[in-house]
Image 1 (tube, rainbow, N blue to C red):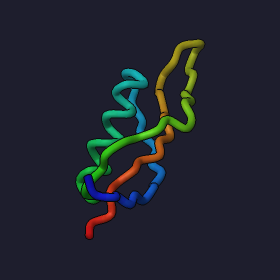
Image 2: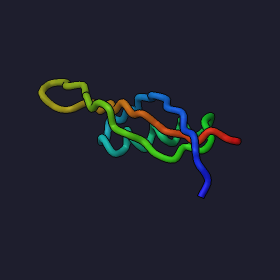
Image 3: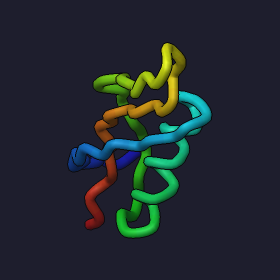
Image 4: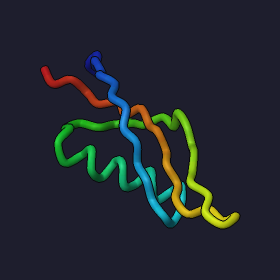
Amino acid sequence: MTNHVYRLSEVVGSSPTSIDDAIKTALKKASRTVRNIEWFETQEIRGQVVDGDVAHYQVRLKIGFRVED
């Protein structure tokens, strides 16, 4: 096994459906421009409330991606 070096970046995913969907949206969009994403860490979960109901979810993530040799 070789030694790996990782960089960190923060992204925020959002969804009107769920926290899970907000995470998946963030990772899918980030993977369009960032190669070698290998893990994520949830930093913050928040949402918008409209008329007493959750209208939108937001999740702030740190994504770790491997630096190429």
